[in-house]
Length: 231
Image (cartoon, helix red, strand yellow):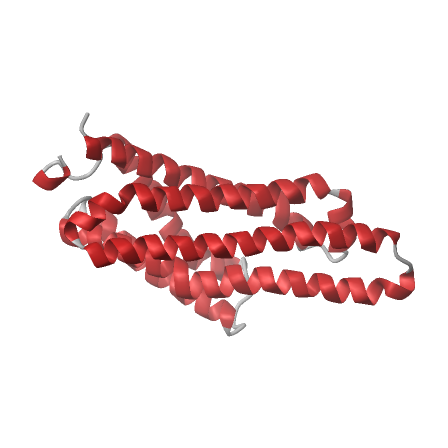
């Protein structure tokens, strides 16, 4: 097994770890609680879940940065600027995940204070909680989905497509999925659709599916063996 075969496996595994951690964080631990009408009380009653959601968000960020670092030498052989751009996009993405996780943990502290406060102070805590959620939502559903994540996907799949490191149908699917993902972010940013409603998920799903297929392909097949410089 050569260096780049090991790299392909590492990239695929980290891709899956990051994606699964993010989906569990959002779908299992945080979104059901934060979307409730009385979310501050729900956070108080489910502190452990919220904290676990924040930790999984950080795990996702670390895994995806590790994936970008692992694939960097391969991308650099075909385009150094693209390799740097992809790694930079993942770093910015990680910063946004950190901000989201800090917002969640701060919300836990706020919910504790809310539980011990009188009804006269409820409006203050609710306003502060909405502000924390707004920072998280704008960072995740607007800035990340418009300016960062689809850009990284475009860079990665463009290099894979041009260098034929993976089947072109697979990297082309990533390019199309990135454009759809970008469109979903724009629609949310301009409040034409709500985050995680049906059309939002439908526009984001193709890229998510492509990334998991790509991850499995890299684990099983590796980079295109016909490319002599990936052997």
